[in-house]
Amino acid sequence: MTSPLAKAKQWIEEKKDPRSAHWQAGLESVLELFLPDMEKGRLIPVRGLEERETPLFESALAQLDLSPNVYAAFLTASAASAIAPPDSAEELERIDRSKPSCKIIILRPGEERRILCAEISEQAHRPGIDIFQSGALLGTYNYENSEDCMDGLKKAIKAHAWKKETWREDDYLGYTLNWFDRVRTLNTSDVSVDKNLSFLHSPTLIKASPADALFQLIYLLLAREYQAPEFLQENPQISEKIAQKDVAFCRALAENHIFDLLNTIKELDLLDFKQFHDKESKTFQTEFQRAREKLRALLMHLKQIK
Image (tube, rainbow, N blue to C red):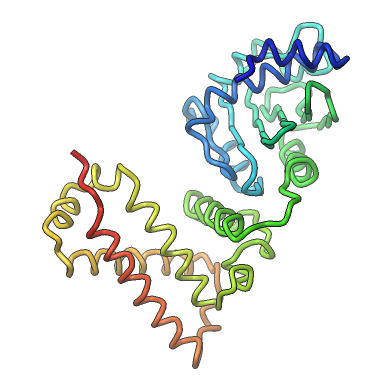
């Protein structure tokens, strides 16, 4: 792995402005620390949220629509205030160093990494976004306030970091799961989503019917939760029943979790259940049972955590 200093040196040798070269290298070095705990397509807070930062993070979570090719870090004050652009780069200074900074960094990986760095703190004297690639400052956007900056960041992500290549099925799956995670976290349907790229809203993206797509989403969500190490660690009674290969218990558990998700989808009006009539209603019941049995089998084969 090339060190940040070596990257900056290389970019400067390529006639890039030393100030932007050093700042991009610094931002990349910060992201490298957190990448092991990040997932593409998801906005992840780093260094833990303080209570006063939670509303700003939740606002970003609701508004920022991320394609499944990017990493996104929400740098809380404890992390963001520790990094600053070079002293000579006054145009990149957006907040007094004595004030609590809050940054969102978007990384589009690839042969030529592109980074969007947004200063969104309400204490910033110049909220805005700077975009870097290969040590060069590609663009900069300044805003009157944090709210306008967040709105501008939504547009900048679509213009400068959105996945332009043809999407594969895995991309649609990941995009839809990440959207639904945000819905569940915030417990609201007021979360940005492109319905033309969500397989729940556009089932034909994965060659599915509405019922197939609904239960595909539910199965993928619950399968991921069941296979997370903390699932058995935090549920010793469930762990014991699984160890006993209790079929009825595992079936009932899966069924209850499916109903919980269906209720969430209905209560938040995420899907029109009136569409499931006649033939589609029969498919709904078939896919419900299929998802339940797949999850039951998965539960029974979970490895015990020792």
